[in-house]
Amino acid sequence: MQDPEANKLFIKGLTDFNKGQTLSALTCFEKADKIEKDSLNTSYLALCMAQQRGLVKNAISLCEEAIQKEPENSTLYLNLGKIYLLGRKKEDAIKAFREGLKYETNQQIIDELTKLGTRKPPIFPSLPRSHPINKYLGIIFKILRIR
Image 1 (tube, rainbow, N blue to C red):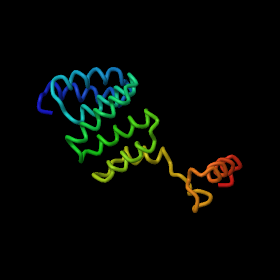
Image 2 (cartoon, one colour):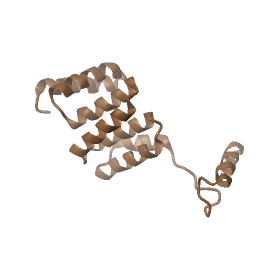
Image 3 (cartoon, one colour):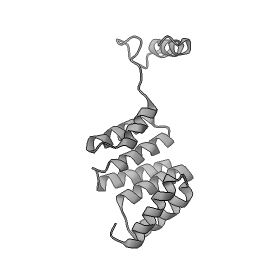
Image 4 (spheres, rainbow, N blue to C red):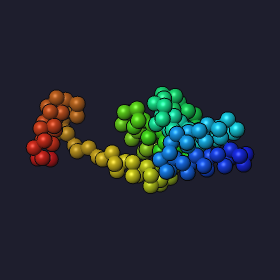
């Protein structure tokens, strides 16, 4: 950021966000965005909008705009992935996280992917994962703790 006031607001917003005070952070990011457009600020603004106001669709489009301006910043992909998770779009979140890891190793993205876990292979690999036999046997095996 070039403008010192916008930079000050962004840093305060980021500090509040890291403390879990997303409403205060949202206000700071909005003010900074009005002063100067910055992709990182826009990304955090979008994440706070999704968390506080539930505006997931708007947040996704804002985050995607930020990524178009600065596609090699892994933090933008981290925030996009978190927004997708808020919108219950786990597959899209995983894609966003993996895309961010292509540009740089980001421990926060790795932590998010670790939290999401990995899937076990289907019981019958010759059938699609969504096939009822794989689906229901997988559920039964999980309940019985066979796998």
